[in-house]
Image 1 (cartoon, helix red, strand yellow):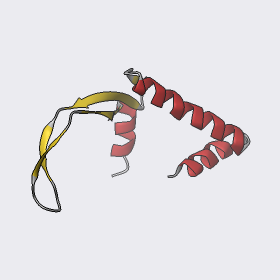
Image 2: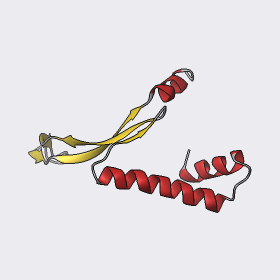
Image 3: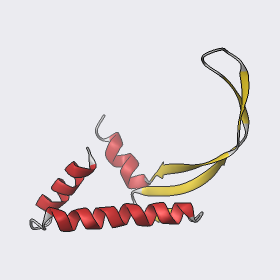
Length: 94
């Protein structure tokens, strides 16, 4: 599902709210999550999951073109852990 598909789906399910308005809400939702993560906050959506920032330690890697060992610096990465309701819904699809 793409962002456009998500917007169309929500627009159809909620009394045909104009796609433009739904798009604005979806964009602001994503912006709010992004801003919170950028500020180091955890975002918990009960039943759906938790977004958080984790530190990835410095590690050794290899340059794929020549096999030379390189050091990959420490970095921050976004992480998502699915909530119970989401896990159960996905498990039923098997």
